[in-house]
Length: 266
Length: 254
Image 1 (cartoon, rainbow over the protein chains, first blue to last red):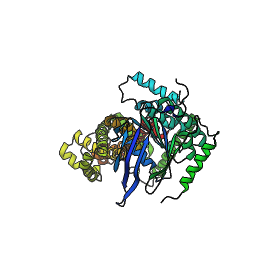
Image 2 (image 1 turned 90 degrees about the horizontal axis):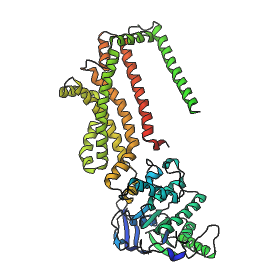
Image 3 (image 1 turned 45 degrees about the horizontal axis):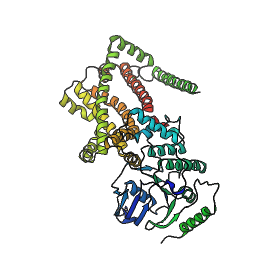
Image 4 (image 1 turned 30 degrees about the vertical axis):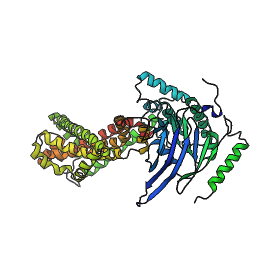
């Protein structure tokens, strides 16, 4: 459709997330309170691709789960385009690390599941689901069940299931963590293509620095005890980016992030 | 390749059965035990022919299968429904779980006297005993299956905008299906156990009744016919169940 989108031109006006004074606590099994996320302010611009990087326990998944509406905030608020997020909301799509595809539905059935909340005719629903599968290069696999697909293909179905209903935001919790390096590169290309075509905001959790640098406009580096954002890095590298053609900026950012992650917390 | 494997399996089964019959024949024919107490395969075969000619072999089979079938259907339906409810609706769970936990250890046989008082010696008491046994097995498995539905499925379903109604039918039920199927298979086996328990007292037809009837005349050959019938029926039923359930929850063995 449009010419290739570069740099900031993908920023749109829907899908802005405003996080103000958000903190999250859990009860630990022994009755104490765990501060999973200390008071955090964060603005995620509409249409941007933002990564959260950090060691386990730094609250990156907790922050993502809060935006998804899976966990309650102890203090503060999360707003999506000015409207407070209260619980699970289909405007916010989630791609899970463990795929969370329904094994009893075919690839097509899984994608159609996301469309059933709209009053579409059966044919229309099917057509839209087929188009989504085509977008993630799974044409001809629509009748296969998740158990018959490889890890990369499963995650592509999960991605299609998420974007097919055009949510404003995609939340992705280490979605490619279980995939091998080559498959991951393919997935990155597919994800960026989908993101550019659908103009959504992406909040992406990872502990892979290169992945964050290839994908995002901005990376928030997090630390644990309590979980918090310690640094934000703007990634200005021109798109399209390639892992096999990295420039000096990339290396500088990479060194800086790894340096931050190395620093002992406390 | 697949066909070949089937053929080998069939060969092994045939060999095994022939072996068992041969050993049985040698032991029973050796004269060490009276053939009135432990009949040879030939005597059992002729007893079966005799029962067939009397017309009771087939009619007993029909009566027993009907009882087991009706009892199973009632028990399985209730077990699935109540199991889903006790697992997913907390009020119902609080109300019913303690009762069901207390009922669980009571064996079917112990229910026969009360069933006869409540429902008479007719079909009602048989249906009651069988469906009760089936119900418990199916309930227990459905309950634990529906309780363990992975949290990510629920989260995924809700963030994809599914209503609670759709979540129940398109997520909870299929996610519990592998457990439900195990419960049904167990329930089918238990239906046979409790069928015999119910028929041993106060029936005028059926495999269990025929066993009891044969005891009066010390017809061990006829008893063996009944026992073999139960074994064959149970095994056949189980095979049918396994093949249906493999198709029903195909994603489990993908």
